[in-house]
Length: 232
Image 1: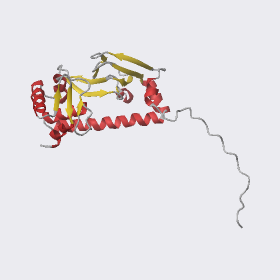
Image 2: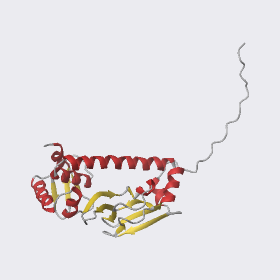
Image 3: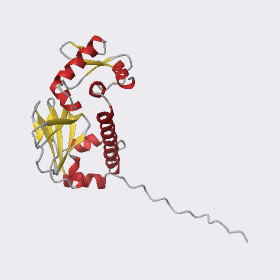
Image 4: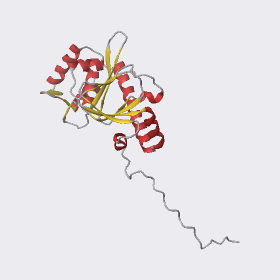
């Protein structure tokens, strides 16, 4: 015997407002002042935190840039990362890191959001869209670290310098010169790629003669510099 369908239908429940804007804006969420958050202006070369300071907050670069450097017990300094607008740093505290493993210094006048660990954990738990964005950043950072490790293990200092310049210039526009932002000294480049300033100076002159870089008060990098990396 066929089952008869009832003509009566239950009214649909009204959709509940989520309280979240149609287009989730993580930057707005981070830069909106609230409990556990502060926006701090840093001058060029000003220290954001030092190696060994308590790791109790995550930082977000709203404007400007930051470089991370470590100093060995023998006093030798090495730059480990150059970060720009939209990047996070200091995230090690979320994994239980008690102290900062590096020193963070503003490479230009910068506006940085400091988010206390407890506030960051709350956002990650309560805002799935923000959590997804942050996870994507961490995965991207992990890939970059692996690439740099391979770069240091297998590439010459010339190739390491070419790669560093291309990354600093955010290369990608074929056939165009892209400015290196922020300005960076040969000493810093040498520390970053693990060689001497004299070697950096030699290769910079070589790149300039080949038309791969320009320097008229501001360093610019040509995308053709990529050929130095992919060709032996």
